Image (cartoon, rainbow, N blue to C red; front, side, top):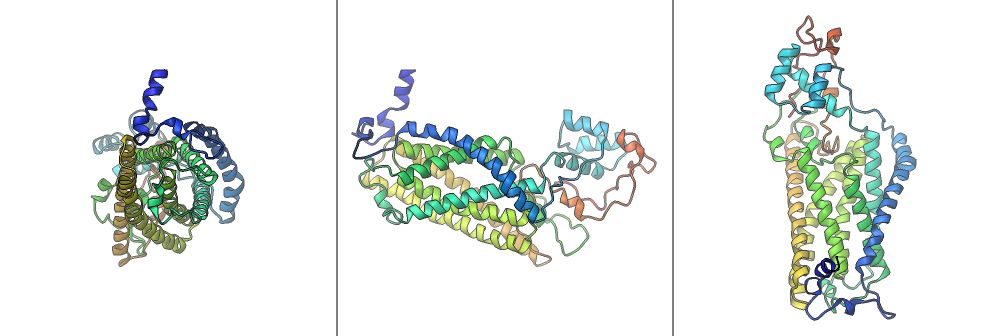
Length: 429
């Protein structure tokens, strides 16, 4: 074990040439980042998670109820033994061949079966109130940490003159402001990493495509603009993995920059990223509260801040400093390369999400010519597996009664077990 630790903490990897860990030991005159400082983030991550539960229960929930956000979940699927067995034992997303087989077996319309599976997937999903509470927690944290970051960074000399991030590196003393900023940010992202498996799975752009496929100016259903959109944005699993990768990259960057004392530029990176996250959560809350005009305004602000900060300021201000200014002042060393690769990977993720945001905004503007512009139907839901059960709720109400045989999978007199036969229901994409 000692050999493994010695290999992992090899000074030639982590530190510039002719610098040793002994040079960065704490003294009475100066304090430097120590790897063991980061152990504090793990119990603090648990504490943040507990604070979140209390916040959502006693602060966010009353706010949601005050805004008349209902706690009702999605519409439940009509009980059916055969479809339930397929759903639980075989697949939650039956393909066309299986749908046709079920249609013949039950004597139901294919669209009716698609609707049943959509309702069945959605009925296990949380209510709008739950989603509002989660977004309000994230909004509150991002607003707090962003405000804290701006307040302490404006007092530093290296906020605008990024070359000072590298002068006298790595012998830059660690201040209490940076230490607190790093530990809280790392603890929060650790809590997100673990809670991602229990939280509502995010899919920020999935429901936006639903909105852009619809023209609310007419009560009738409008066919999809194009069938290619559903193929060009990630599936729920893909999006979950992308967010998981994002959390891993963020945690790695925070850890890397702290251990080898790149904390100054690391603080700039964290503050820059928190700005757009505040607006994203605010837009989602406005949408859950059905303040659509406010939601639209905040979404436009979010899109502008996200693309300008992460595709403009980030590469020009941050990457220019970490790649070129640090090369000139300090020179490259092994962990320097790893750090910059992680920063570049973050830029790739930014480019991917910015592409989706711009594409959605362009489609929203073009669709707005024919109907109401609703760019952030986005969060109707912005989650991975919520598949817009509101599609059915916005359509004409059912006029036929279910036959008794609908609960046991046998045929009804009208051939569909009393379900609507499809004209009022869109194909699921």
